[in-house]
Image (cartoon, one colour):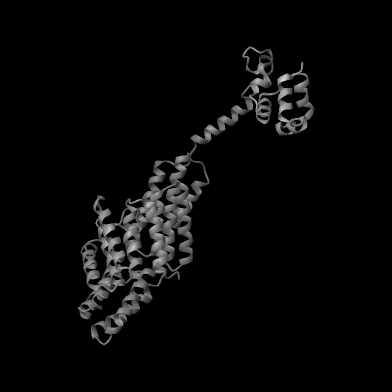
Length: 408
């Protein structure tokens, strides 16, 4: 019996049976039999034909919608869920329930990350780098397995943090290109996880690296983009103090420096501060002490030695009572430079602080330390006739040479 509804739908479509059969995925003769003999196609073919013709399949084959239809009851092929698909469903459900990650694994990765941040303040970057790299490889092995969707996102966040630390450490060990590549990867991981705070944190490290590479406009741009992701939250403190303020200082923007420092202190004031120092590589907001230290560096770049001295002394009052050798030594360098310039220069006091910096940071091996020691040497040149400055300047030069990372 001719299927008049299907025949009319074909005519109205203006397309040939051959064309329609190709779209449905059957032989043209099969499609023609559906019209001429009123055959009842498999449900998936009914759906495909209806979709191609733009007609509800139940209108083309009304018997399909009748629960008591003899054709439906007698033809096993018309079952809506063939038996082989049951296994497929089971496998998919099992995959959703399977994971090589649990809460303890994620916590272990978090603790590893925080320990790396602590160790960086007390040990050489090279020692920390190897441990972080080992953990990063482990995360990559985990990612090659199965996790629940939210756990996989959490793994991407941990991978992003560890990768960013590797980027900063690679830079500090003299491998700047490698460091920047790691930081690019870290930002991609943060972006894939949709983690705004992590994106902001990585931008802060990218700004720091650009600053020490002498690319101050880039440092400012990275920090400002980071602020977009931070949305005024905790990460905005780091971006304002270590990113914007210091870059603006190098670019000669005094008002910009003052504004950035003020913003950092304002945000910091409303965030509980459990650790008076914090760690530079930690994901926690910058501490007040670190804001002071970065403000000192920014104001030194502007030639405002008195203001720089004020902030350096505020920072040192905190650094000196805690185990933060790198921060303590570098802030002493800033304090020394502040006493070597300005109308109230005091070279003898500068020399005393230079000796302190040497005693605290003698065995630090870091490109950052080497760079800051070089700044101190430049500032001390005009005072070389002063015996105390000349004597310690030679020691600083030796310190700068020793600070060059062994891997470079």
